[in-house]
Length: 124
Image (cartoon, rainbow, N blue to C red; front, side, top):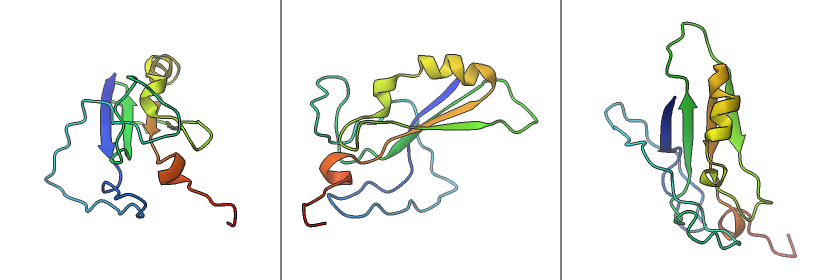
């Protein structure tokens, strides 16, 4: 398989500010070789992953064989009750076995959780 890890889909957000779109660039190369840091969350994830506010990234796993036909794409958005979760926690072996090996492109993405993603007060 080909694995593209840690590709940004927005500019790194600043605290509680709304994330801004990336400016397209034809000449920017992204080194997509490592898992992104997990977003800050309520649960302690220990050494499972570093955490950062700069955590809005996606990963793509594709078959290595080129194809002239369009392939289906499965997009996985991790669970966690809006207060925990990150893509690396799920690994990729299961998805490779069940999707990529069947000629399906697999995409996983991270989103802000807990106080940076779903801050709520009792009056709203």
